[in-house]
Image 1 (tube, rainbow, N blue to C red):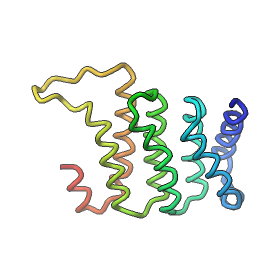
Image 2: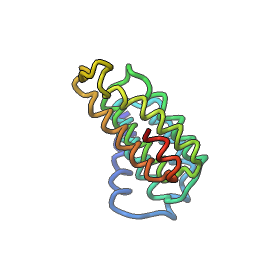
Image 3: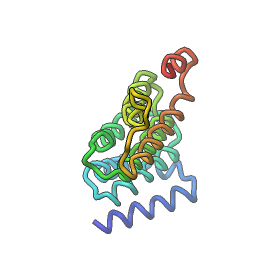
Image 4: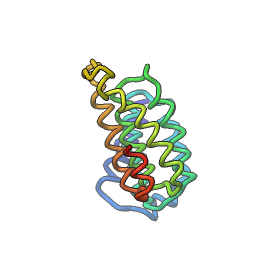
Length: 168
């Protein structure tokens, strides 16, 4: 377990300090497989590291790839939606999925679907019907902020007509 975390940390440092698109592309299938496994079944610390490394990996590749987006989205979304998972893990996943979609997805409908899922998360911070502020768990605003941040990043990719409809 700690070996995977150490490996993820090493990749995080490497991907943060050097741009290696050719080397990353040459080993992408193996890296993708391992990252998906860490995102799905890893511990909290491993999952958080995997979310960061997955974002950096997509930045390293730097090219749209809808199949890659779907693979990572399918690994991330169940945990992001699971309210029994830790808030810090879900926050990391909310940040990562926005970056991953921003870089890899060209499918507007997939982006809009993700934005709707993110809105379900951050909309729990909306004022209640009586105009009062909801009482939230201590770390929940961080999750809502991460989801809103990813939503806004994705909004910047939308054509004006989509953006206008999404903001309403």
